[in-house]
Image (cartoon, rainbow, N blue to C red; front, top):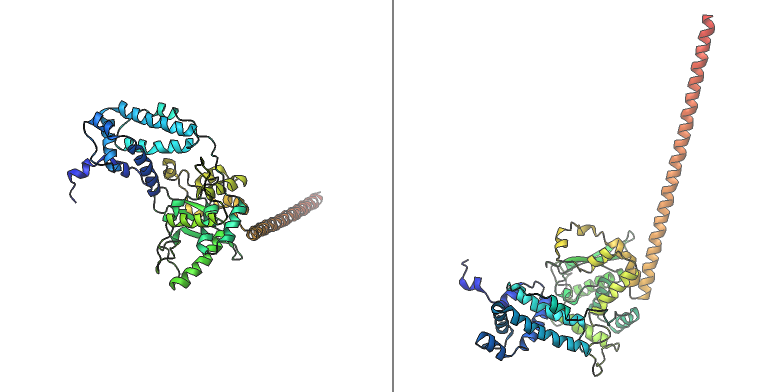
Amino acid sequence: MEIKLEDIEGDAYQNFIDSIRNKETFRKYNSYLNHFLQLIPNDMYKRYLDYEPSSRDVQELATCFTTIAQKNVKISKSIIQAYVRDLKKQIEEKTLSAGTAKNRLKPIKALLNSNDIEISWYLVDKSLPLVGKSSDRAYTREELQLMMKRTVDLADKIIITGASSAGFRLEAWDYFTWSDIVIFYNEDSTVKGGAIRVYHGDIEEYWTHTTPEFCKYVLLYKEEWKNRFFKYPTEKDPFLVSVRFPYPRRLRANGVKTRTVNFVSGIGMREKLEPGEKRHEVMLDHGFRKYNNTMMRRAKVNLADLTDMQGRDAGSQQGSYEKYVEDDFERFSEYQKAIPLLTIDDTERKEVENQKLKAEKNELKLKVNENSKLQEMIKEEREARIKSENEMKQTLAKLRDEKLTNYDKDL
């Protein structure tokens, strides 16, 4: 391979692309960046660069904006501050949330950082209101139950139970293969729960856990797969597949989103927004993640384990030092606290409770047996000690008698 001049020169937009690992993150960042750059008129470029962009596509505008920043950081910062003032106005008019406004600045930071352009963001960030508590809520169990009743397709049931019990983000569906689904069994062969590997092969890869309810639908889906494709799926096959193809083709995140819109709308939760409203009460996909987080907290799941199981620190430097052995699935015992709350169907939840009571009963029985064995050991040790003491007393008495007998003889 020969390294060419254009390979090392690159351009500002390509550096921006290279700096973002996750596809879904890039999609959002690219959209926000393009929105920002489109607000800057050609006259401004002509004034500070003495030329106008050859086109209004995001790549050309990104190059022009970074050129301004390289020549005059103060001007680029003034442009950003003007953009922030507009965002602040939208926040005050309640047409934009503080959290979304903060996210819209992230791609601009990424563009400048990826091109080694440093500006002080302190005053820029301070000019925006603090991100307060989100006004949107999680789905309720009753709403999830209605969704489950509304759907007849196993793929939809897997989407609902998987997203709510494991709490992963929508884009995770672009990664799942059958090797990422692990099912745990009790000693009586009933389903105990499972583990899911999220973002397989990505720097943000992590493991989380799921409920017996989800696992049972997975097993049914596996049989459905066999009936459709005349074989069981291999570990490398995509997990959920599209119904439009005669061969296993992945149902991607956009397809999952379309299905979610259908069954959520089916229970009357995606009605047309009223004038002035910008978002629904429950976010379409994030509502599942919020449900997961709410139930895990309610079950008093350890906060560090909860954070790990939701992938919040995945890809961080701290994560790279972690020596957690995934095959041990050591977080599952903590996750089990939340299984009754995360289970959607009432019958399934009763079964989980029965399994929990059975396990507790077996554990109690085991402890009673262990206690009985311990008491028996103590009794045996006591009897052995008494026997040893008696034997010692007899031996001493015998020696004393022998000594007295020999003494009498000497006299």
